Image (cartoon, rainbow, N blue to C red; front, side):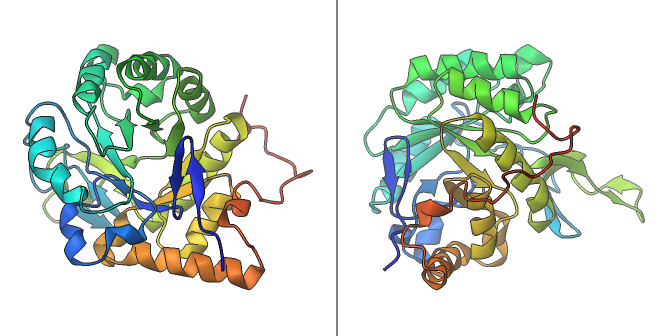
Length: 312
C-alpha cells in the first residue's frame, strides 16, 4: 500500500493533489467526494464586492486557455456565511485564496478569515499592486517581502504564497517570501498573454490581455518549480499544465511537495481523482513506498546548467 501523505509546514495532507484556485468550487461536491483530495483551494476572495472584467472572459488558444476573469467576488463576509458551511461538510483541509491591491488591505482581508475550519491562507500576490504602479507584488522581491511580512503579522494560520511566472527573477522572489515568513510557495500562476481574432480585428478577451494556462505552459512551470526548490527550504507546490499523474510526478521530481490541478478540471471534472489514483499506481509499479520520496529526486547531479538559465 503506497503512503500518499505529504507535509506542507504544519499541515499533513492525505495526498499531494489539490485544485488550483479559480478552477474549483463547492458545487463540485455533487460530482465527487472532496474527502478524496489532499486539500481544497477556494477561488480567490477579495474583501470587497467585485464584478470582474468585461466579457468575453475566456478564449481557447492552442494547447491552453486564456482567461481575463478579473477576480469577481461577493466579499469575505458572504464567503464565511454562505460558502464556508458547504466546505465544512468535508474533512479535507480548506485553503482560502485571497487577493488585495495593497499590502495593508491584504492584511485586513486575511484578518477577517481568522475563523474555524480554515486550514491555511493562499495569498495570491500575482495580482496588481497599486503601490507599485499596478505591477504584481510577486514581480519584485522587494514588494513580495513587504506584502508577505504584512500578511505574516496579520495571521497565525499557515501562509502559502502564490507567485507569478511574469518575473525575471523567480528565485529572488521565492527567497523573499520565505524570508518574510511564508510556510510554502505555490509556483506558479498563469502567464500573461493575449489573443486576437483576425476576422474581426479585435482582441479575443474583453480585458485584452489575460492569463494563459493549460498543457502549453507545463514546461515553463516545471522550470520555475525546479529553480525555486533549489533556493528555498519551505515546500513548493507545483502548478501549471498538470493533467495526469505523470505530470504530477515530473513536478515532484523537480522539487514540488504537492501539486495543483487547474485547467484540466474544466475538461474533465474528475481529473484530480485520476491523478491521485494513477499516482498511487505509479509508485506501486516503481516500488516506491512513500510518494514524498519523489520530491526533489531528479537525477541532475553533475549536469551542466546554462549560465543564462542559472539562478544568481
